[in-house]
Image (cartoon, rainbow, N blue to C red; front, side, top):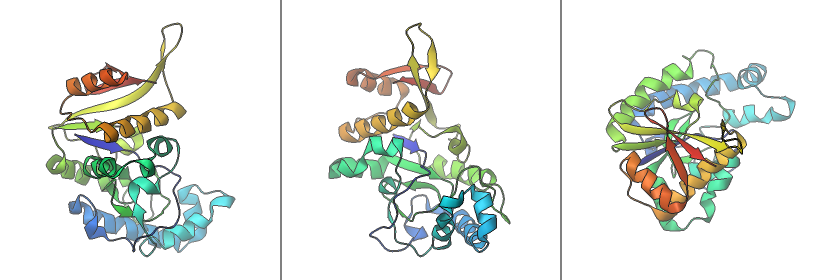
Length: 249
């Protein structure tokens, strides 16, 4: 099973490892696209006012432009530790034992706007770039990533993919139609029986789900196997449209 996660806008600064090494990242066939986006980010960083506008930065966030300017030379850390926020706080990868972290490294890709999908243990720098950003002198990020990422996943992905990305990040790398995949939406059921989508708890539930998978490391190769495992864990999954499931929080 392959699990696809979204990134987070909030990130830890610093890092204990050397600068970014593109050739060490998962899916090396995306190296050309990674170089292109990095070059565009560096060019944009030379004009702080334009960078602030493109990146949607407020006055208290202008330091993010300098973060992007150093993106090739800054210290790095494992992607799963770089991101913070609701999903990653619930996953709490730093507290997992070595076996669980190895499972994350082997089974989780994080879909970034800067580098495309990266492995959970791939070492990346801090940066600021969202899926909807339009970099001057570069094609829209969806055009940069979608085709190459889908092609890369077609050769790298196992036969079952659990897609926990937001719609904006899923658009940067659609799962190949030849691969069995399930897109997860988090919902809640009210006292009146109505099912409603969640926002904050959507991310928390996804983080908790990945943490449980890393801890138990079940062998899952189909939606049926996923639902059987979820039932044993007391998690409620309901199949909706083809290729989609609802996870009840």
